[in-house]
Image 1: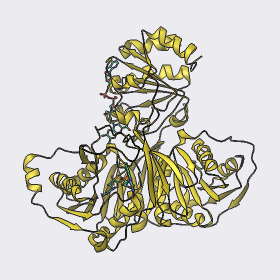
Image 2 (image 1 turned 90 degrees about the horizontal axis):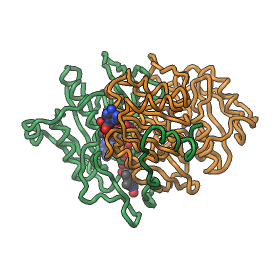
Image 3 (image 1 turned 45 degrees about the vertical axis):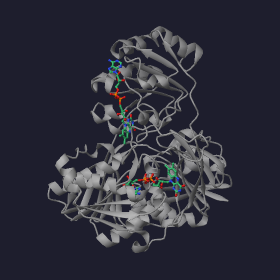
Image 4 (image 1 turned 120 degrees about the vertical axis):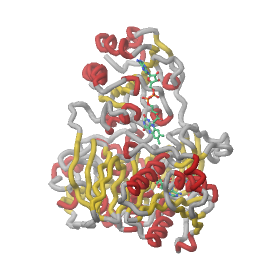
Length: 250
Length: 309
Ligand SMILES: Cc1cc2nc3c(=O)[nH]c(=O)nc-3n(C[C@H](O)[C@H](O)[C@H](O)COP(=O)(O)OP(=O)(O)OC[C@H]3O[C@@H](n4cnc5c(N)ncnc54)[C@H](O)[C@@H]3O)c2cc1C
Ligand SMILES: Cc1cc2nc3c(=O)[nH]c(=O)nc-3n(C[C@H](O)[C@H](O)[C@H](O)COP(=O)(O)OP(=O)(O)OC[C@H]3O[C@@H](n4cnc5c(N)ncnc54)[C@H](O)[C@@H]3O)c2cc1C
């Protein structure tokens, strides 16, 4: 069966992003970019399913500007077989990305679509679920374990109260949580090999999707600063401060 | 303007996250109804009807909604939402799972995790792990919104007397089924609703050492949380994780023990009223957000703290 994995180019998770002084947008000049960590987990899971013989081909797709091809190459170096770049300008919203991914799903007919549960820039946590609705597929979001059994999928999900297990008929959507796997590092030979793997470029017109914006970002601002705190000498002073100054314990 | 709030519940009790979502709906303005989708969930509908200011409670009591399967519940919500301008749910794992599916069915954007309402179409929401607050305006006629519960004080639980109306529609998408769950049973308050949270990180070294936190938690009526590193290492279950990709908490008192203070962890707790950090490394970034920092070995400090309170 074929697995489709959606990957997103985002600011590296080690970067502390700041709002520009004029509040128009975040400062993204000369910032290190990377594959979204949850998408890396998604690629790893698909590659493991291929290594186990469950999946026959792993196709990665990214929606974005030309530079997104770097992240597709990263995924190819991790073991994906082929890439699709849906070229769009600007920053499409999750609904538009889901519509574009639906276009790719219609063409590729994967049995399994794996996405990250959220991207660490927009923090929207929407795209996989939206694709589920548009493609009329079941969804196993926030997955910490998946098992494929014939034409169905069992998924263990991380939920507020603990863990939940669902059974989905294939084709289905999975979105990854942190504990699904620990992604490998790409080896140098695999990075070289990835450069020769096929990467097709397409666009919204070819997919028959018109991209419209529903949300306008009016501005950005830093969060409220916390007043500087103090270091206490010992436990006794800490307890005294909590009781008598902060008054949060009695 | 009419807003539909989606109740968070387990078929027996209405969860406090619902009261936070109603508060956000009130900030948007207009009339508010609540949808309870579940099975044998009459008690939940009664509790929702007791919230002051609620017009009516729609109760979709049917086996197909028993386990909140997103595929089924999203069809129901999109159906009921035809009569509303806004659909609002708490940004719990339940809301996060279902609402984007609703938005896509309605062909509108979702505004995730709002922390403030500027006007009925303009909201504030954190992006980049809370390092930036974006103000966003929606041009959709109908809006689908999830609410960061810690940003809105819950409305009162009692005093109202809304009518309860049954919704007959039984949507079964036939795509998914419930197999089982492992739900943590705890006498402690829920992490996201606790007024005191004490969290342990990699510095705790193993799961057994979390007992050092339990004694203190018992005395303070606190809930226990953890960093991702502690969860990944298997010290505690996943539902303890506080952070950008775990639970967001904002208690009156947050005590971080053996946690370095990575941005992803801070994203989940830096709106706490008072923050205490206990760490043996005086340069740990957690001290930059702590009101009271104690540079100490936790294995010494925790027993001392337990006996001093
Ligand atoms: C500072 C800032 C400003 C923004 N300004 C605007 C604006 O002015 N106008 C506007 O329309 N939008 C804007 N956005 C939205 C931005 O483009 C979002 O990142 C986008 O809407 C996708 O949301 P998400 O990645 O958070 O989705 P999520 O739903 O959190 O993503 C989950 C998963 O979906 C998949 N996925 C997401 N995006 C892609 C992709 N591009 N290609 C392939 N797979 C993908 C990945 O598997 C990912 O792990 C802005 C975002 C930020 C952070
Ligand atoms: C995509 C992504 C999402 C993430 N989401 C989250 C999230 O939601 N929540 C989260 O927490 N993290 C998250 N992380 C991980 C985060 O980046 C950090 O790795 C993690 O928070 C570190 O946990 P820690 O502070 O317990 O461990 P460490 O960083 O290893 O810190 C341990 C601390 O314990 C102290 N210590 C050790 N021994 C003692 C002792 N005896 N006494 C006192 N102090 C001691 C040390 O000085 C150190 O400061 C995420 C990362 C990524 C990439």
